[in-house]
Length: 120
Image 1 (cartoon, helix red, strand yellow):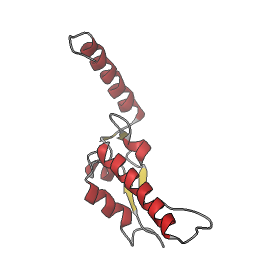
Image 2 (tube, one colour; image 1 turned 60 degrees about the vertical axis):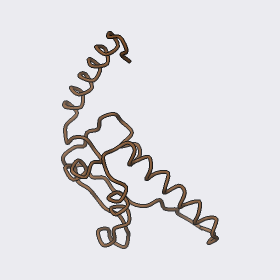
Image 3 (spheres, one colour; image 1 turned 120 degrees about the horizontal axis):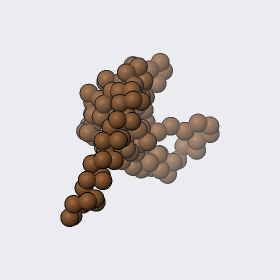
């Protein structure tokens, strides 16, 4: 999820899916409070990054992450294309061609703002 929201503008294919779930560990986990605290801190870091780099609210993201009943014997949410846009995680449903067009437009905007005083 952090990689998906890290871009300035994001696209998702109409039929693509995203799975939102809490951080997990595979293998042997020593059941001590420090292990839980470590996982909890990592989870909070991921949540903060996602909400800072997308339009989804923290409450909505956490709700999707800890939802039960949608995945067999698991917790989390699966979003398909348009649903990821509607909840604010991704900017637009589109194809590679649309993504390339958007990239070209963003490059042009950058060139124009670089040529003006105070531009980037």
